[in-house]
Length: 167
Image (spheres, rainbow, N blue to C red):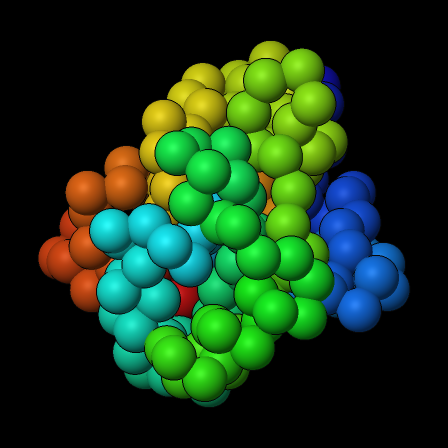
């Protein structure tokens, strides 16, 4: 059995959106995904604008960004639910999906982030978020391909090249 067959994919998970409804990540099957833990009061929050540019550039080719707000680093996501969505949309003009606030590290991490962070679960990457705006790149089959640290800007050459390779 290959590693790809042995391990789950991101499609095996569900997550809540700000209104409390659960969304299956299988709704994004067949798309290249960039999964990002965000925080509206973080110094990296302007990356939301760059993420929006990246999304606009590639969405017609089957690319989506999934934002998962988190208060795990520096308590930089003081908002909750619809308030987070409102800030993302009004201040940063975000049109990609924004989920409800979750935990992304430690024993209380959302199961999706436990999967993303551990090679024994995803078969490829062994890196948990070290700060807000950590990015995981997912291929069209729902498998983790790579990650980018918070300092790596969404429109930087490494991110763009990695996405284009998968598209």
